[in-house]
Length: 183
Image (tube, rainbow, N blue to C red; front, side, top):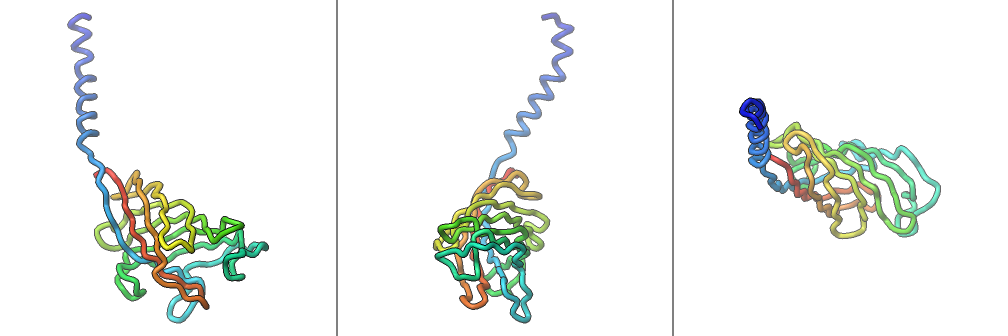
């Protein structure tokens, strides 16, 4: 190869080296977030409903209260707080939907964006999509993406039912998110 061709390729080689060094410098870190999700199915003053049934199915679910059926779909805009009390500081909202997706057991298909509106993650989101076997003591759901500080995130969330009212079906979930994102 002639000196002329080598000199022409030199800027390209330098640019590629800079890009590779920059990519290697971006490290993936794991962030642990703990918050509480308030799923209000039945409005009880002063709390409005934050989970609204938008589709009512016909087939009753055997292991559940007759109020819920295979195919029922709820749209949610649930409050996320630092503690289990609804009056504790808000960190964001859980926006999305869940549907009763099993004919044989109490399992939801949950699609939700955790939208952070306060604190160090304000303006960022975490996207979760997966099966939520609601009667299990701990459920693991995958993180499938995110925005802001969590752009391109992976990881998982552990959901635990902190409390549930058997009359109103209003529930508080403890959510522990383990999110891997590049910084």
